[in-house]
Length: 271
Image (cartoon, rainbow, N blue to C red; front, side, top):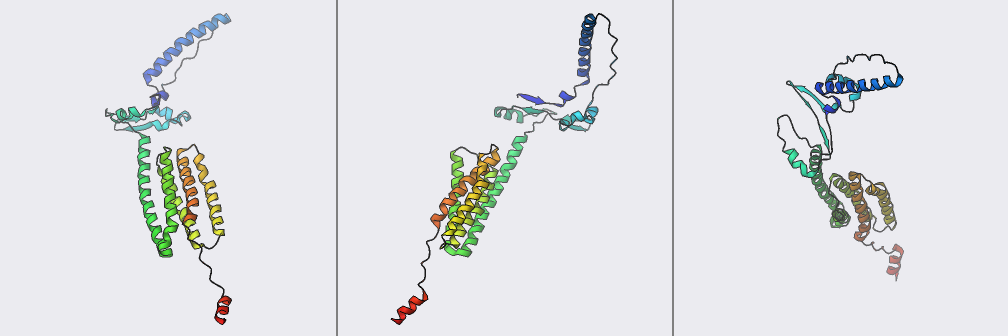
């Protein structure tokens, strides 16, 4: 533990306040004596300090307590409770702190609580993502038949590549990575459908490239952020969108052969 913040820092006990008053009075007598010697004349007697000791109620009513009021939890059943914030706790100490069972003392690890909550959300979103992939596959089958795999496989490969790159560089899988995969599913499938619907249009690849470029500029640059959540989201989108942009043309069906003109058929029949 490198530091802590407790209510007693702002509101010391009455005994401590009295002891501090005695120390201040002793120093004040010495300072006044030196000052009188320097001036060559006696100083008037200081007024008596009739200030009452500071208690929690007065401290809470003061604007100076605005930043620390959360430390006071109140009184219940004749017992008061407050929070002691600690800093610099190392992972090796967490087990011992979690085992605190002393009456009146309870260890609360907010970081672990938030991590558990985010992990729960991540698991739930992963399940919804799997259901989303299944629903998209069924919808593509109804529209394109057996050719639906051409629109779906590039996105699945891009998502797997994004996760693989993160594992390779040691990035942890977090909630925002899964959220990025959900966005990647929608964007990647859109590219595949567009190329599948316009397999004879050469300009469709240019449209997909412009869409991918704007997505990379909008989301991929978040990979440069120092915030872990934004960095993970941006890294997944950067690798995933870049991969689906490069893979989608490989799964595009070949152009259909153009039908011969009608007048050519009539000429052959005439001959």
